[in-house]
Length: 500
Image (cartoon, rainbow, N blue to C red):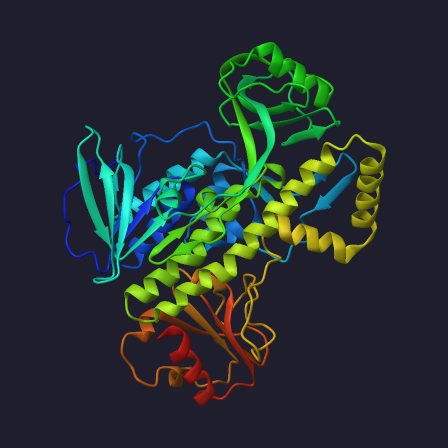
């Protein structure tokens, strides 16, 4: 790709006091690096793999909240054109979750292979000026409190050692994270599904639904289109527990599919097959000093609900604007403490919800089957319970903790809004800006009491309606501050405190 660099690591690459090293060029690392570079922060992205986008990923779903984040980066429309929308989810074979009622511009989930998302994010990162170092593995790191930097030890394409220095390092290097190990963090949890199979196959019979998934207590299977005439199959049989290195046979894939889905859809011409395991694990902390974890390096979940990729992308969206604000001097380092407070509980919630879905789907004992039937009945009949579950799966239902005494809206996600003049909120968020939404009668100019460059970091908009609340929206689309009938002085003080 034009602009992508393949260089030998250099020793002592400057002071690194305003730079960030991101380790791992998966979706989480690419989004984070692209955000930082767009904000004017020098970024080096280190990836041990050669420069190629892998098509072996298991993620196929972008949920509404992730699509909103892509909208704030002017990428959602492109991804929507590439993928296929699905406006409902089928759970446990009986319960249908309707997504058309979501309070979002994106009232659906988008079926799109992860590698297509990575292509778009890599292009954006290259265009923003991210320095890529492929075939470069991290072998260790050291934090030096004397000069506020982190030294990363690496090994380049030819095996040559080198070092890189930066103000901060983010490990987005997956479940077997070298960064996590280097900072001494454990990764407690366990394997939930062992010896699952993956395969890319052609089908003689087209499935009735875009995503086909079912479990019967002994087997589960998932089918999703790849967009090139092939389908990805993910399957698991309770009685088939062999090492991950055991070769996968095509007959095994077909048998698991028939057991779980009732038929194998005439699958043929498998071009690739593999075996994997699915773990539930979470690091006890997402930050140690000047080193952060994001995505699968911080948490891994079962594939149920398609939440893993989406949670990692939300980690990146939360952390990137905070790092940029601190490195530009617009905020104190205490802002970075909020990453742990906001994202660790979300990771824990996703781990529990995805694990719960798998366990209920695979239920076979009478009491677990009865419990699943009860859960299905409650979700089908009780609207608030169903909306809560839908909000968690799609990501739009999470809110972040707010300081004591804060306005009731603080920490809540803001849906896309039509603003006065016809623009949209998520268009105004582009460029990593805060957005202040005021009543139409408010004197917006007074939110810049000291001039400076704050205007570059803040967009002042008005409600299209007659709403009287004043709301300051963070770059990631959550409320930083709000007040009812706020005056100019109060608004100016709040903006100064939050935007810097």
